[in-house]
Structure formats: C-alpha cells, structure tokens
View (cartoon, rainbow, N blue to C red):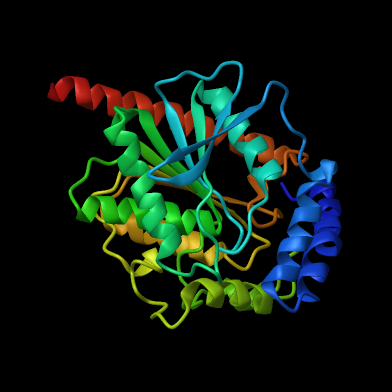
Amino acid sequence: MDSWRNRAFNKLLYRVMRQRLARCNSTLEMRELILNIDNFGALISTPKGLDVTPTKFANVACDWIDMPKSSGNKIILYFHGGGFCFYSPNIHNAFVGRLAQQTKSRGLMINYSLAPERPYPAALDECYAVYQALLVKGYLPQNILFAGDSAGGNLALATLLRLRDMNIRLPAGIVLLSPVTDMAVTGESAFVKSKDDPFFDLSSLLLMRNNYLGNNNPCDPDISPFYADLHGLPPCFVTAGTEELLMDDAIRLAEKMGEAGGDVTLNVMKGVPHVYPLFYQLSEAKEAIKLISQFMNDALKRSDGVTKKAS
C-alpha cells in the first residue's frame, strides 16, 4: 500500500539523498555524503545485540555480523550496495543483522574493493574468491545464502553465474534487492522514473556505473547479468519498489529467470524507494524482511533435503 508514511519518507530521502547526490561533482564528494548519511541514526535503527567482527577470507576484508540467535553453520553472504563506489556499513549491517536474527544465521559482509580506484573486475574477483574460501574452510554450500542490494545485487548474481560456469557447487538461494542488472540502462523505468526516484537521478547513476565499467562493454554478461544465460541457478527472491529507476532491472531479470526455468519470486512494492528493505522505519521494509527470511529458511531446508537425499 502506498501510505502517507511512504510519501513522507520519500520526500525526506529526496532531500537527504537525491538532491545532495546530484550536487556532487566527484566520487569523493559522494563518499563523504554517504558517510554522513550512514551516521544519521534515523535511517539506521540498529537492532539490539548486533555484533560486528572484522575478518578476512581470501585476503579480502569482511565482517562477521552476529545476532543473539545466530548459528555458526548457516551463512548469509552479503554483497553490499553503494554504486560500486562506496559503502554504508551502519545501514547495511543493521539490515543483515535482522536477516541473521530471523534465520538464526551468521552474516558475512564482503568489503570488496571500490571503483574508480579498483574498477571491474576487481570487486567481482574478490567476491568469487571469498565464496571459494568459505568452501575451503569447510562451510557447506547448502548452508550458504547469497544476498545483495543494488550494485551488490549485481555482484551477487555475477558471482553466482561464475560459480555455475566453473562447476562449483552453488549456494542454497539468492536474494536480490533492487539489483543493478543492465549496465546498458535499457529499462524503461530508468527514464520514466527519472524525476520521481527519491534516491538518485540518472546522471548520478551513470557516474557510478562508469566508475565501475571503465572501457568495458556494458552488455558483457559478467558486468550485466541480465544478458547472461540464466539457467541452472538456485531459488531466487527479487524485490524492488515502484518509485525507482532500477525497477525494470528487477522485473526483466525475474521474467528472464522464469523463462529459463528458474525458481524465482518477484516482489514489487508500490510507493517505496530503491533498496526499501534497508529502511526499517517503513512498514513495507518490515514486511519484506519477513518475506525474505521465510524465503531463506525455505531455501535452506530444501537445499539440505536435496543434499541428504543425494547422500
């Protein structure tokens, strides 16, 4: 439901995020802005009991995210958003903590290298290496879930496709929040919603995209998973809001996954902004966390059942 709370929050986000991002002339200015926003308590609502512990896998900086109900054998491998250029740890850690609590899992946040200093394929290579390192350390694929928002959704899905193509055992499922899937920006919503998106405008989106893309082809499936062969993937949950530029990136991806025979759930929420599940003030965010957690729990049960049957 498009509530008055949504409209009020979108107006706040428009002032706090979009208008200020549009005035940024460089990635460094964007990073300073995001750092300030990440410390704005009204956007975070950190859950009680959240514990964040730095670690490394494959020499890539990561953070364990634990809640009181976290269990050591189930992992949510999280690929954070931020336009490939920045990171908002307080907001992302709070969200992953809520998922960890609902699924009795541990979160593992990948702090991959950022563009433009380290453009494609640096971040993707690191994400791929982290998952392999988890397997080497004895974590079981059927107990691992991928999740990512925005640019992190791109990296989560691109990592999954690499693993499939390399015949490496895949995780139990994947959750994508407002994923960036088409770096060629051919979705109609990128233009229809260009004035309405309270998060960012098209020029800011293209600046971040170009930092990551460099001189590479935006239609390369390794960069734009929408153009990949999407067969043979684990269950996928995709969600987006109707007020965002990237709505069609989510919808068209889910449609193509379904056409490839995949088990995909698409949830498009009316009236909410980009990566809305991260903003716990919204009732729709709370609802999304319930849906995502249920999807994750079901995916873990199905994957474990298949493994036991195969053995």
